[in-house]
Image (cartoon, rainbow, N blue to C red; front, side, top):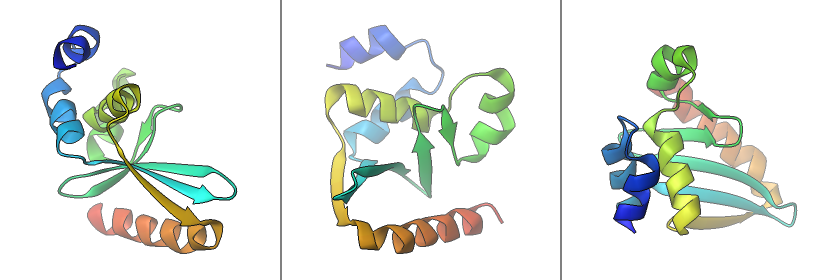
Length: 114
């Protein structure tokens, strides 16, 4: 499993951090039911919102480096690897919880960037 990931993503300078995040279960898929809306996060020192399909992450590295250079941060890489391997925590919630969850996540993100 590690060798397959290393062969595919090993050239990325954040590979080791991404692999560590996957191994420690830091990648989470929050799925809201019955709508099926999904929010991906990677939890470490801070929790980061990740949109792998759009290539977006709420971390500082994304804003100051990856965005300018067209690359990805290790959080995005971790989500991609976790999806491919099925190694993420699935957290299911009711659609009614979506606004509260999103508000709390955005509050945490704004505090982390102060």
